Length: 267
Image 1 (cartoon, rainbow, N blue to C red):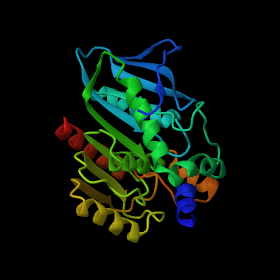
Image 2: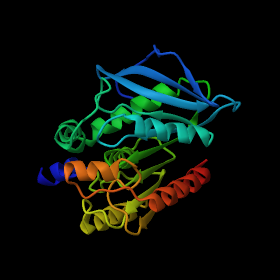
Image 3: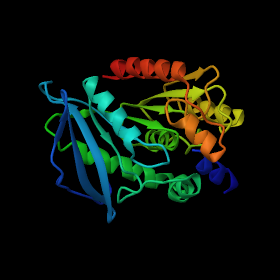
């Protein structure tokens, strides 16, 4: 329990259909839409983005946010992925569009997901089911990316058997669920070499678990990068809440480039 709470501090089963109530919006070539659906009775408010000028179906990428919730940062990443030619959904994991204002509230929201990885798996599968309803989505080509808390969630999902071609974890916690046998999806871990919230023992155990279960993975460490290194707000939040987190532009750009290569090879 202590280890779970430390992780929390830092950082389709019963899916019913949905209809988006918000109007579509366009930002240049990128069209976006707020969508509402439910998972086990919890109403989820997610955000879909795609390039309206691109014809035909395209791969799907689920974006799982940091423990702050499905905020503007996660939605920005969804738009960036749309610009690369994917259809992306920034997933509401907590329900009701809840956002955390401080680490204590974020801990409260995130802890149930760390305690029971199947809950996160179900929420990711709910997001997949919703975005697959779009005519632009290729249901045979699905990946997920996650940040901090979200990184842990996408790793749990693929290790527990969610049908994903691959996942990318950006500065995610690595004390994840044990991998099931026969996992065919691939994993990319973008890890901050100076991340004080992920002990070396977690790195070792994580790699050993994947290797024991013959999971294909790539693990990249970025020099001088701390926890939350991809988020431009991390430096301010670190000062505000006295957390050892900071934005690292070099690592941010390099990890995004590494993700682009990874996704291209997947699809």
